Length: 233
Image (cartoon, rainbow, N blue to C red; front, side):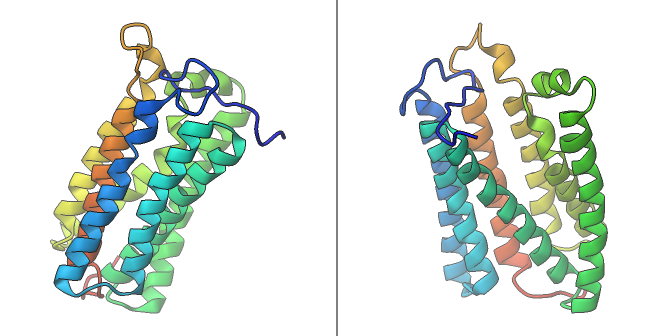
């Protein structure tokens, strides 16, 4: 694989060049703002511990990685985009499970196995069968690659449901994060389809709403999940 081969998969990009996706590039400020909001809340509440620092830094890194991808738009910058996103997802899953399981490592480990197994099955169907099986190209094209985020969406709704049922104070934050993420995915999916009537596309809205979603997740983490509570997965 040539790591510098140009990638053109978004409506806004019309040619090779660093600044051919200005909205897609600079809308990544939403992730930096989300990280800063989380930092300000954690500092004010005196909760800047290790897990929260890692989540805040990962949130900021998502913005940096996505900015690189939408400027350089090649295979190495694609990795800079994808790796921080999925690292943040995995970290948040682990921290949330630990917090809502009451801090019990055994219950947290068991909960993590269940969640990752379910998410893995969804990932296999959406990013495995659909990407490599018959009709894969048609499905991927129709969804504009958004099917890869189905596991993250599922995990978010699972945690929102669990915390809401338990009446955990983080529930409303996670619930709203799930709703915002759903809307964000919709705008990511229709980006290519609206090129003719809207040449700038809608991918930048995906960034903005994702920034809101990550901001909500960080608020849930800082305010209600920074230490274990007597709730079980």
